[in-house]
Image 1 (cartoon, rainbow, N blue to C red):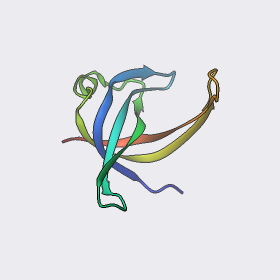
Image 2: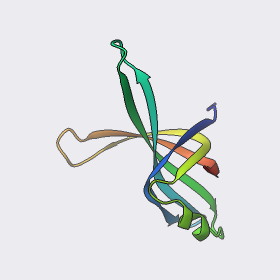
Image 3: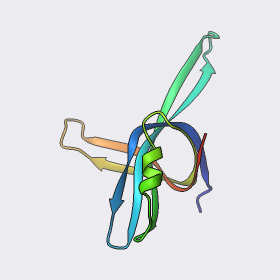
Length: 108
């Protein structure tokens, strides 16, 4: 059983509408920044990227939502965490990504 994942971050890639036979959704990326102090007391920042997907029924009207999910927009997302591993054609082709299957979006 997965716990819900909540993130606050900035959209890194404008939302795109995707359609399957049974469903329609939007996909985009979101960057979550974290600040901390290292062992020397210096401030450091890391960024974790998530691939976000928000799926609804095939008759969903997501165009208005898509208009507002643009690069730089700050969002609160809640959903189910997802991890994916895949192989690319590049050298050292093993890759992984973090994702969130979104069920709630709040504009901040």
